[in-house]
Amino acid sequence: MKAFGFNLQKTRTYEIDTTHSPCEELEHAVPSFRQCMFCGSCAATCSANSHIDFNILRYNLLFRRGTRQEIANDLDNCMLCGKCSLVCPRGVNTRAMIMEMRKELQTDRP
Amino acid sequence: MTQAADCIIIGGGPAGLQAAGRLAQAGYHATVLEKEETVGGKLNKWDKLFPDFYDAKKLKKQLEDDCASSDVTLMTGAEAVKVEPEGSMWKVTVKDGRTLSAPSVLLCTGFEPFDATRKEEYGYGIYPDVISSVELEAMIGKGEIKTRDGRTPQSVAYIQCVGSRDEKTGNHYCSVNCCICAVKQCIEVKQLLPEANQYCFYMDLRMTGQHFEERYRESQEKYNVHFIRGRVSETALTQDGRIQVKAEDTLLSRPVKMTVDLLVLMVGMEPSPSTRHFAEELQMSDPYGFYLSQDHESDDNLTRHAGIFLAGSGKRPMAIPKTRKDADAAAWEIIRYLKQHTR
Image 1 (cartoon, rainbow over the protein chains, first blue to last red):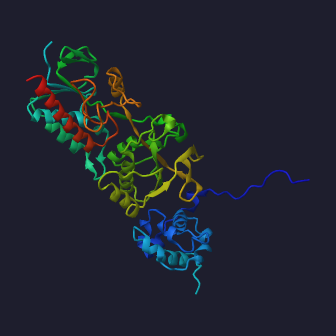
Image 2: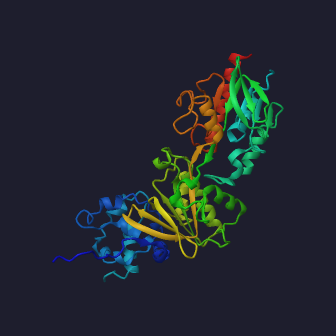
Image 3: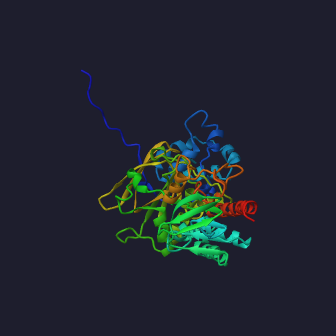
């Protein structure tokens, strides 16, 4: 007989109360971090994003909202080519942003 | 009946005062009918004006000074209730029964803030710490932001488009001013409460005026306001009396939940009761109850009735600078009309 009922999955809701923490270190290391207006041009030009699920815009947002650990492994997929910095209309140093996030999440490989 | 003035202006807010001042400067006599005991209209409820924190009291003083002429008669506590033609003149009846007569009438009856109790899901009128932007402005004016039970808020959230761009409330239009007003208020609240976290929920932000965009950036870069794209779906009261807010963060495609001490509703603009009344009485109402001008491109101060003119936010939501320029334009149209028809 087929199993009946359903299982609860972990909630997808993120809670700002429990996760929110200021991004002071990142802001200090990369002052342009705050200037992102989430236009998505970085993600649109990203070579990695066109082949695998790698979205800098989303990482920026998740990092701000405090849901950081879930992006830790993803960050290693960046090839640091810098195309995103080239197209950013607000001059966010996206490459430095990725490097600093890696450092803070300790995924930076030697 | 004797002629009271060259023009009777109904409404003594920014539009009415501006037009009265301009008419007087050109040598025409204007009588302003204001239903409240003091002139200034909604300006009295505001402390500072966007985008540059212009002092509302200073602006009111300037408008009043322009009206300090023997050619302007300010009548306060005088609510106009009827406007009707009388020969080639217009007769205006005041609530206490007095009647005035003039060749022209300018309607400056303006707007009123949306009644947020109609958006029940936000909890206004149900939870004490859900307030409107008008109430927040009063707190900012006093220099003290507190919850109802006297706590200092650690977190404040704002909801945009309350009663604007909302088919449920019947208001399909954008109220123009709330986006930038929220940015202004976020900055002021942060100055008063440097420790507070601030979140602003929006559908999209319409920074339409010059220098608005810069202010919006400043609010993020300097004052660390978090703008979250997504419309709040519901609010609830937590056990410790705070406000829980639920929304979808549409940039992340994920639900977001948070608890705040103060929730501010950026209420939109609706036609004031007087605007609705005269728009209907004179058969020149748009679908929302605002005045319909003769032609919004070229004859925006004229109406279907010769001698009845319009200025300000009774026509549609507009900010004070635009309202004043609209009143200037209306004064010019009135002068042109008076020259043709009276002298």
